[in-house]
Length: 263
View 1 (cartoon, rainbow, N blue to C red):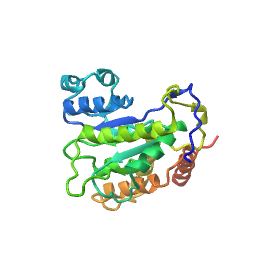
View 2: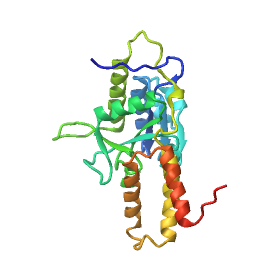
View 3: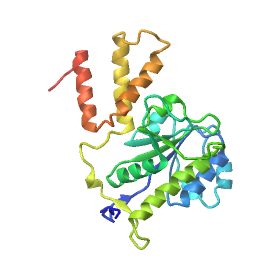
View 4: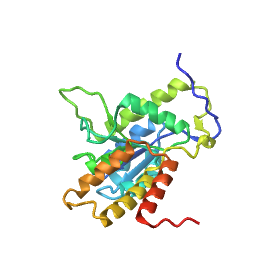
């Protein structure tokens, strides 16, 4: 028998963040908002939309999801857009990106749902319509997601991919709660000092580490430096670093660099 989650029905709403990186068409943003609203998911973030924001084409096709579009947050970089995200999933058509951990969509939704229930912030990252996410984008995620499709024809547009994620999220949610329950909430007090670190906190650590390694001459080949930096990020991301882990690592690199200044 499946165990039901014990959640206090008086805290914050339980929903993930949908993040579109460099979306090209306003129509796809509008249809994405429409797909999300069907399942009660309304937190949409954009990173450098090609045609700017707001976009009249998005509103024209959103079919009643204008309120989702009105609440969109726009960011200049992936680092800014995911600063508060503690569990980030990257959607990619690549079967495997070196150094990343991959989950199928069912495992990913189950893991992300429980993460939100326990006070975390989850993000699902989608790339541009034509090219998808770059390797540099993917390695910043905790996991990549694979969606089982027809091997002879696997072609989803942006809003269809988002709809599948939202559908699976809603299905997991409904498996834990009856329809007559109060809106699903999560108790923020469940957060602990050992919770998974935010993407923004991890990126700050990586930047500090990159600086010190560059200063020490670690990157012998300028051409290979970006690849080595991606591999370093992948190495640490596979460890699912907690906030305490990051504090320890910051202390280590400060000590090794001779800049430790305890008071």
